[in-house]
Each structure stands twice: as structure tokens, then as C-alpha cells.
Image (cartoon, rainbow, N blue to C red; front, top):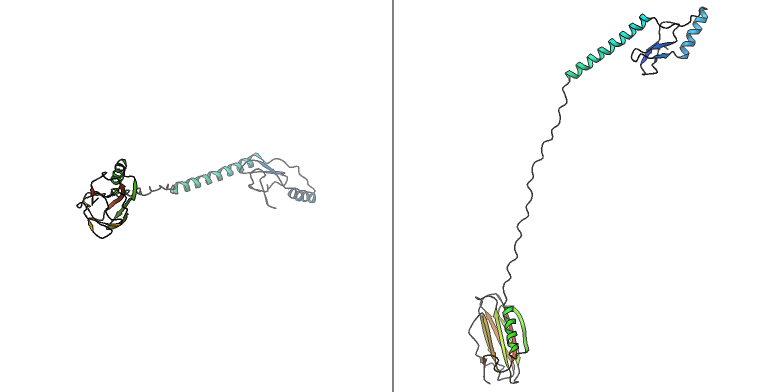
Length: 240
């Protein structure tokens, strides 16, 4: 075995040339490490063979100074080389993150306003029925109904001494209504001229179904209704 390691820093140590040395000084950390037992035993056997056992003495001061100086010189050289390498190497460039592209915020499409509800004439018809009810027109023959286009209403009249008020109300002023009526025998009944709001009271002279046809001017919605009234409650038409 020609070398062993420092027990303090682990550096490789060379065997001292002095056969009587019991330890070795580390050139890096300066600590002493005892020689391994096998080396000491080998040296003792050699001394026994020579029959000249020499007591180990500490290394001469001049040897220690030279070793320390050599170690210091080596460390200085390593430091100079490392410093030169650091100066020659380019410093690492810091990675500058590029700003992310600005994405315009999505704007919600304008909310479409719901189409305005077209009037149907229902409110006007309901108000007129309430007024007729006060005047004694209580029995509904045709409940208020909203419709459009041409319609034929077949209302059965009875000869009970009472009359019938017929209402046809358009929701739009330009949607005039043409109303025609015939008796159960087919005779034509006089009706009001075309208008957006028609109301007339008919006192039947013949019992049975009286077909009433309504022709609107446009496709707008209108409301029709019929209620039984006592005589004198409205402007009656027909023979009594």
C-alpha cells in the first residue's frame, strides 16, 4: 500500500519516507492521520529483520514547511485557473418572458328586444261587456275570443223577447272589420259599416242559428263576443 486517505477530509495521502513515522500530515487540511496498521506491521517486520528498531520521531520542521508550501501553491494555482475560467465564461443571460398578446375581451352581442306585442282588441271588448252587464246584459252567448282572418260565427238565437249584442273589436285602427249576418231563413240582417270597432244589438224575429261572417282588412288579431241583453239596452236592429 503506497497511499491512504485523510480521516478528516478524505484526501489521498502519500506514505512518509521516514520508516519510523507513525502518521502523516494532510497537505490540504493540515490534520494528521495515523498510518494503517498493516503499514506499521510491515515496517516493524522490516526493522526486526534489520535488528535495528528506530523510535519514530516527528517529521523535521523543514519538511513540514515544504509540504505546507507546496499545498498552498497548489491551491493558489487551482484558484487562479478557476477565476480565469469564470471570467472567460459568458454570464448566463436572464430569460425575459415576452408579454402575452392582449386578447380583446369578447363582448356579448346586444340582446335583441322582443317584438312588441300587437294589440288584439281584447281589453276594449272586455270593458264594453262590463258596461253592458251593468245594463242587464248578463248571459254570455259567445265568450270573448281572439282570432284573425275571415271567421264565421254561428250563434243560435231564441225568441224569448230579448236581444243579442254582437261585438267585433280590432286591435289596430287600420284593420277594419266587415261584419255580415243572416237569419235562420237566410235573410240578410242590416249591420254597421266596416270599422275597427263594431257593436250592434239584434232582436231576432226567427229562432235558430244566425251565421255571422267577419272579414278583416289585414291579418291583425281581433276579438269577437256576443251577449244576451234586454230590449232597450243597445241600438237594436231587426223587427220586434
